[in-house]
Length: 375
Image (cartoon, rainbow, N blue to C red; front, side, top):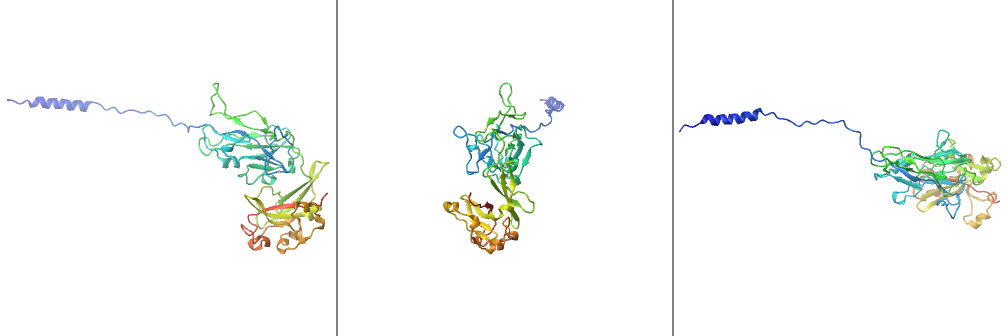
């Protein structure tokens, strides 16, 4: 029987040819350019305000409200914005909010906080406002109690304001918009703008909330406080120390300001009161201020009664002194107004050599007292 090789070969060739002749089409992808990163909602300051700490009781804020009237701020009072508060303790005096639930960046909020003095009645913080620093009494370490300002004599007749910006640790954007509170007699706050349907809009700046009165602070300019003010200043720069750091091997001066009621201002009367100036060193911990060396003068330690009742009858004009060479050596030219900190630990005051934590001037707080005769 004759085999038909031709037909098999022809079929195979036809099949092969058909495969080889079919074109191969690859998928084609057309791409746009990349967009910018997707942004969430910026953080906002939901509510913020200054708390007032009266000089008579600086350990807790004055509440104000229905039972207590609002009061006028005086020189010597402390105003504080509690930026230290955490989310679980937020209040109308401090609340940061982020609609994306990004975590607050407290460090950057603190670093960018600013205090200002403004003319009475000012409604915005502009170039005419005076920005305050640590030499003016602004806290140099606000982490534990929040941003604070010890009201100084320059504030008399002025109103106090502040500027704050919210930040978050994650998310985009990481920072919000500055909120200005030009008068701390009022609380400030921000909110997200919304569209016609009430949905928050992420790409528009926040809107300021209507002003709400601060229950503790009356809307009046700052007035004088106590009759006497005692300040510490850096002898080299002549700047008021305020909340600035204190260093070893440095001279610090005491300044006594006395209220002139006629001019409603304070005048420098240091020379008239220098015999009543004394210096103290304290160590501060969770238990408060612990004395290390008290009532130091150019004559040594002034013997001041520790008992409250005995102190009422104490007359510094008749005071006795406990001489101490290590103390007396600290007073430049034997003058009570200028105190020099140690050069190194070998030159520390004898009483400190046996007292921790550093057995020296290091780590201690310096304070000036004015011990006057009773009136």
